[in-house]
Length: 103
Image (cartoon, rainbow, N blue to C red; front, side, top):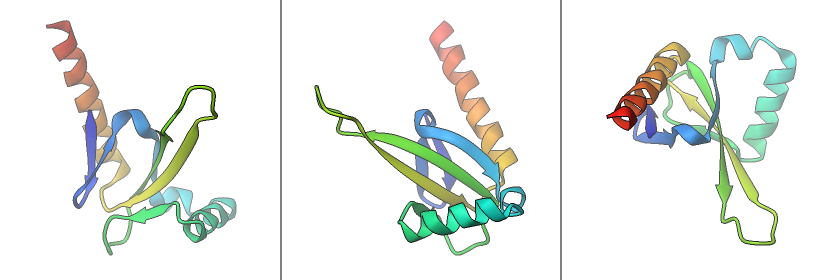
């Protein structure tokens, strides 16, 4: 299942690590430093030019081969959609997936 996080962007529910409220997380000096470093290293994806309302932290396994270490790509999305709305969407998708499985 996929979650629409704003604009033309959807992410797999399996890849989502966390959905965070932007206003809450930037209050911490350490978090601001972390996000600055992540932006410098290219891990941040801005969905549009609007002020972000939430952060979506994702990880995706890249081309795992037998006998080799797995490569993990981390992407942090700045979404214009509130964390509460995204959480409701994710829960709705999970519940509908369970309902479909039980049929």
